[in-house]
Image 1 (cartoon, rainbow, N blue to C red):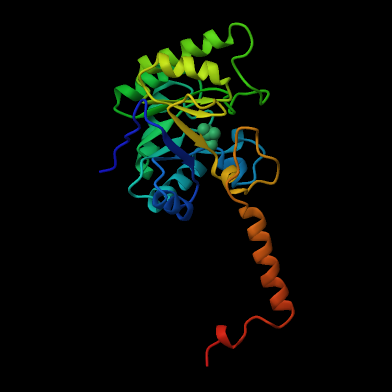
Image 2 (image 1 turned 45 degrees about the vertical axis):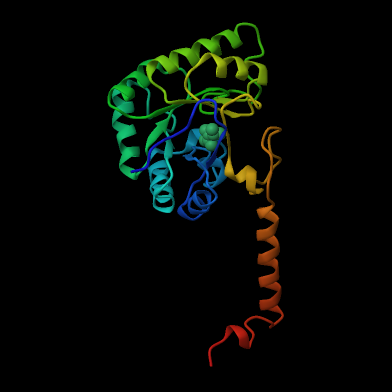
Length: 252
Ligand code: KIV
């Protein structure tokens, strides 16, 4: 039985995954929790933002991730409009659990929704700060007067409502530190500096599988986009030049 074991005060690493193959590699590398983020929309499915993805698409990919990483906790990101009220949220969160996920993530301070999910024994990861499902602009949050207080209140309310962890996206490090110190649940930063308990990044940013430039906070650890391009070019050149398949790759 896989258990979610993120510990307050201990550093841990979370990454997104969207398919069985990469989920398997993440598990082999020792990632503590896999998030099937709705960033699936723009990172893999070719949508322009996360607002366009359907519940069915999210469930399909969460099932694949669960097949690839059977021993790692998996959280499914509930897409926009699938948790607009507590009863709808419970119905749809159960669909995620049916895919093999161990819990769900929702964006914003949806306190009644979290309470309803928690009451049904469903693990909920909260997500505040920059919340792409509703954001009008991608910019650092919590800098304008009143915003930092609001975010602190939201963190506290989400903890009380039953979240087991809280993603803090794109907020100043000092505010993330205050929030991390003020709640008992682990915080997971993305563009929120070093004081969060854990860190999450989008796998496509980490591996260099994006078309554009990474956001400032997203460190790129590999250049797979160019690796893919170079491998494909080599294959194409060898086929066109009659070099592939050689004897080595042929049957007698
Ligand atoms: O969809 C996603 O990948 C996310 C992370 C950025 C936290 O929500």
